[in-house]
View 1 (cartoon, rainbow, N blue to C red):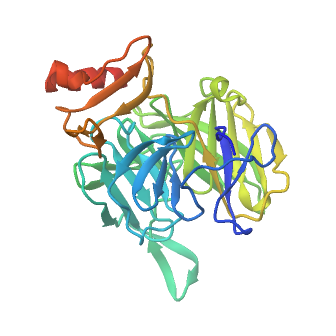
View 2 (cartoon, rainbow, N blue to C red):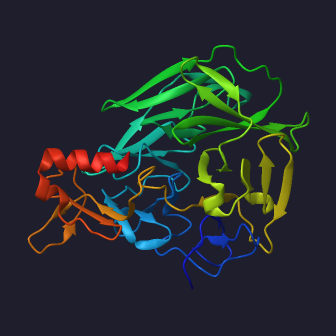
View 3 (cartoon, rainbow, N blue to C red):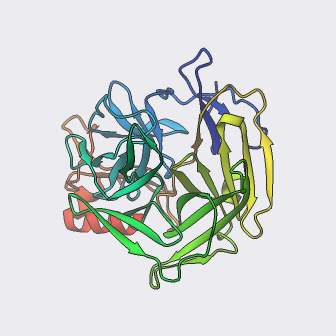
Length: 370
């Protein structure tokens, strides 16, 4: 089996294997490859591309390079296998929060890379909503997080046409609410997902027909934080949005990933197909996944987010960790005094922080990661 091409689709299934089935977007057929360590029950892909994997240890892994890992505290077995997983910022930036959102209970799990020695479990209460129809005599339930994205270090969730909620870690989880000025005028039902792209927050709405049988339109809006308004997006800057299920929304450069510009890619795992919708007019093409196994969970496997951003240096790996006496790096640490920064662009900087001192080392790392 070869290197996993990304982006691609992963379908969780029970067809004689504990490994998810991978499918090519361009060919719509199965890929003869697998991601080492990833099974149907122990992996949580993030919009940033890194996959959270719980094996004998717990780590974030680059899906295209299984040797590139960021080790984390071991994740408890109690965590639901269908959690949504999101990073607050790029994982090499100090204070990055790894967040897991339970799909059925009002529970989140989180840890800070290099700072926390164990995962924290938090049961949240952000209000109630009616149950229609009532279930087991209950006519209300706690409001769950149903769509979430990280933007500029904060988590935004449950985007609506008239409101959006915010989660920050200060350091404890703190919830707040933004009322939308001039709410969007809409009647009917829609599936709404949030996507971060180029430090901007977008809302993708899949609008259902009157009988809730199919999606009749796809719209995209961008948040104007200065006015607290959702503004219609005519394009998404040459990117492609990739969405799935109730939670997942990601953005990638269409040119770099071989995707169609200014389009939304959506997985429909139960029916074994995906859709590509143009942002400009909502025009949609449907593509069947040939000989796909029965599945109710579809995931996007993505190349990891660009670490460097707009700088010209290409970073192949950055390790933020303590160097032991044997010269090896063990774990991840928020202390930069003994950190190592490995760069490749006709030159290498070894032991950068150790040579320039802690203060200058932090500034160097943060400048590169901007």
